[in-house]
Image (tube, rainbow, N blue to C red):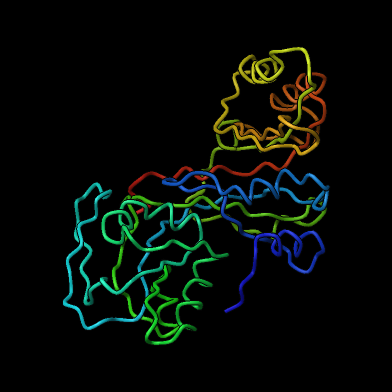
Length: 297
């Protein structure tokens, strides 16, 4: 398997070596993927042509992979699971001293790790598949395990020591689909559960902006513009701008669509917002995927 980083995916689309990229944006259990946020903030203007053109919700199931020991199997309680299910294992975990995985996966399995492997060292790695590859490379006597998928276990010849170890049964990740603004979006097919509505409630838009140093209250002034136009904000995030200490780039998700014609409620709001910001950037509009909890199981 190729170990492709998030930076690689952004670069591939910007340089036209790939038409689209699918990147994780936030998890229902562990929150926003910070590295994706930083790439969207794009402080060095390395990806000036990239926009979000779609979103997709994917249920995430984590497994503990490794090499079995001769210890007796255990039924491990899932401390954070709403259903109180047991993690049924064919092998014990007493020999595991190190757990590799991506920071998001480690966070999504916090309760399981704290209860069942409290003394194990947690080592962050670039991806869950890379974690499985690392454990496989250490050989059959390794005392390490990886949080990864059952597919990775098959690919790298590892054993599923415990399955379904995520803390929440409804654990899911929202992914963004990226493309260049100057390429044809018609070749992207949205997931089958897209809504038919095309009003402002059927679309989402992502915007980034920075604020002047003074006067105070400028962030509230920007947000008030959307309230005045009855536009619902579905997310707000911030990252250091690195221009100077304690200065931030804000990213907001708002229900509505930026129209190419220049008309529309959101276009009016953006026009009113502009003089209240230091600089701002439209990062795409896409059809909202309204997923009910039952669809994530």
